[in-house]
Image (tube, rainbow, N blue to C red; front, side, top):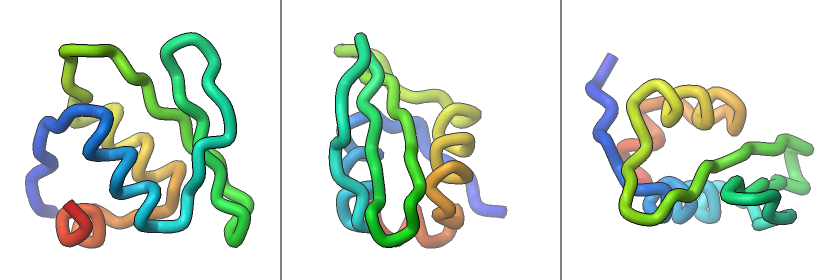
Length: 75
């Protein structure tokens, strides 16, 4: 399995947008994205000045049904 980079939330949001996810709503610091084609939801914590850890990035990718290889290509 390739290494997951530590990235800011805005880069992960760009990947979700490329995969068809759109911002559904914001609850506090969490941006909730929805993909109408697949019916999947994914929550991304957005904290200014902080990057997402590898574990939370993997969890978000699993929720969105995006493989690590596909994620790295979309970056």
